[in-house]
Each structure stands twice: as C-alpha cells, then as structure tokens.
Length: 491
Image (cartoon, rainbow, N blue to C red):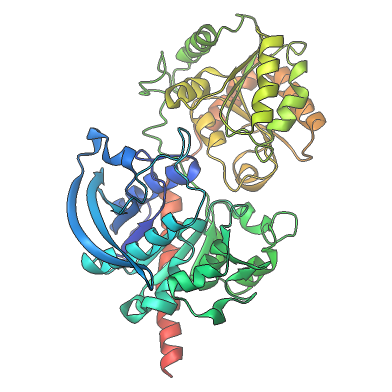
C-alpha cells in the first residue's frame, strides 16, 4: 500500500445505493468498497444514504435511531421532520436518513429508484440539516450521480455559512442519466432564479441535476480514465460535452478506475459457488462449469461456455448478442444470459432459449448467488457495450478466471487488452461481436493459450488501493480549491 498523507480528512460520502444494503448497479459496489479503502488509508468516512424500508426491516444490519425531529424545509409551505438511523459497514459508519413517507414504499422488486424528484429533494436538504445536527464537520462531501447533484448548489447558494468552506467532489458513474426536471424545482428549494441559465443549472429548458453537480463542485471525476476522455466528445457527451471540455481545461475533471472488493469476489472462498479454486489451483473451475450447466439444463458438450450478467439494454450491447446468438450452436459454444430490463430483449432471449435449449439459457431475474456461479462457471464473459463508464463485470469475471470479450470503450478499454487478458473489438455491430467470439472459441481450443489468458486476468491488481489513493488526491485538490475560492472572494 502507498504511503499515507499527513493530513487525515473527514469525508462525507453520499450515495442513494450502497452495497450490501441496497444495490441496483455498479454505484452500490463503489459506495460499499471505496469508503472502506479510504478508512484504511487513515481517513474518517461517514456514508449517508436514504433509509429504505427494506434496509430498516433487515435484522442483519442492527440499526439504531440516533436523532429525530430534524426540521427540513421542503418548500416555503412544507416542513418535514427528518430522522437518522445508524449502522456500520465494517469500520465505516453508515447513516440512513428518513422522514415522513420518503423511501418507505417499494417502487418495484428490481429497483430502489423513484420516478419523481421529491424523494431526492428531501434527501439533499435533509443531508445538510442532519450533518449540522450531528456536527459531522466534513472537510469534503463526495457526491455520486444525479440524485445528489443539487447538493453543491444548496451548499453554495442556500445554506452557505460554514458549508462554503467544505470541498465538494462529484462522481459521474453514467453521464446518460442526468435527472432533468422543471423550473419549479428552484422555487421548491428556494434557489435564486438567476441560476437558471445555460452555464449553471439549465439544459434544453430543464433543470439538470447532474449538470448542477458538475458546475458547483470543486472537483468532478468519472469512473475510468478513458470515459473521462470520451465524454468530452459529441458521441459520448450526452449534450454536455462542451461542459466536460471546459471542466477538463480547468483541471477539474479526471478519470479514476473503479476497483472491486476482492475479498467478496474471491473464487477460493466464495460460498455461492460449488467448488473453490484459485490461480494456483484451477482444478475447481471445471467443477463450477459442470455444476452451472447442470443447474440451468445446458448440454454437457466439449465447447466453451460464455456468460452475461447485465441489465438488459442496448447500452450493454444486448441487442447485438440477440442478433448473433443463433450462431452459437454451430461454433459450437454455449451462452447464459442473466438479467432484467428491456421487455423486447427479454422476449427475444426467451425465444432463443427455447429454440436452442442445449446451447442457450436465459434467466430473467436478479439472483446474486447465481451471478457468482455464472462468473465462476463460464469460460468467457461478454460485454459488447455501446458505452461503459467503467464496468465491473469484466473485473469480476477476470477474478474468477473467466476471459472477457468486450467492445473497446470506457473502462473496458482501460482494463481489457486484446490477446493479453481478453478479446477486444472496436465497431459496435453484431458482425464484429460474432467475429470476436469466434476468435475466442478458436483460442479456447488451445488449452495452453487459454490458461495464459485466464491467469493474466486473475493476477491483475483489481483492488481499491490505487483508486483510493487517486480519490485522496482529488479530495485534497477540492479542499485547496475551496480555500482559493474563499480567498479570492475575500480580496
């Protein structure tokens, strides 16, 4: 581990999903892992997240109430009393914020995200009020994705005071999701109308939460170096590429590659897989493959097994998988797809599964344990994403000796290198995907080459150690930027 800086920071880490409490995607994995790595480096980190009913009802978390009746002004005519409950994620304090009926009703079985905005307006304002009541006094507030994007604007334009001295870092996990709502949001939050302009909160006639986070934060980062470059282009910038170029020119935008929790994703100890294995002893890998085939009813044939664990969407390239999957039996190869999402993709994958029962299996559900068995039991892992800010699937797959097949974009380009630890293609088409899968099938037949690819992935450093050091640097830059801004305002 790298040397620790002399000054320990008090970091308030804010996310609407945190693993293992509430998880939809990769944001939860980051929020559940990065704070622990920062604490190991000597910093004090407190996580704040919404108090979802499903979390409060789970006896595993041993939750205690630590504060009640904290007034939160939702608008000039409506005040909600917030409350705070506490639990721990190993050595990291976790505070769950609730009030009234916010976050107490389930949206659906597969998501924690609400369609409107009131929940997040409450969370944003309650977070600041709770921090003051508990005297948290952070040096840095680290915010994640659009749901938290207005918090820096509230700090600078509404509550002010000591909050003007607190550095802010805003992490973009996926620029495509920006949180756009009507002008009336400003009046609800009692923010000045002058902020509604193209340089601050407004984009195409809407208040843009993610843009607010970028404009008002001292430092902004994405979750891979390559994605930080891509979002400065019209193709990937989602109408904010001009802002991203401006942030880059100011030295306020960077890219930090995610890590994974290697203790959780560990084939030598994972309780969800039937046989353990490691880079020193790969013998259990075949047993995992045999068990997965038997569990899902696939034929026991001499062919590579490819897996997909993903949200079903064209962003993840599942449309290209569907377009070329009929050719799997002739390669020969087998395919398992596990995930929820686009109904059309689910329908097409169901048809493929019925048409090729010995070669293709679609599992339409979220099952974390099954996902572990897919990672462990497959030979290859498909991620033909149209764009991928970082991607954790390819990292988890490598940890389990499963060779990734990816499109060269975002974090996939930062982690997978053709012929070294996986297979890479550039053009996002079914033809290119098929050609690359075909190359992987050919390589699989060369057992020496395939073992080399497996071991190359398993032995890569996928920990949070370096990333935590990089975030630490961003935090220090945010704190310094705040000091300079205050000095300039005072002069």
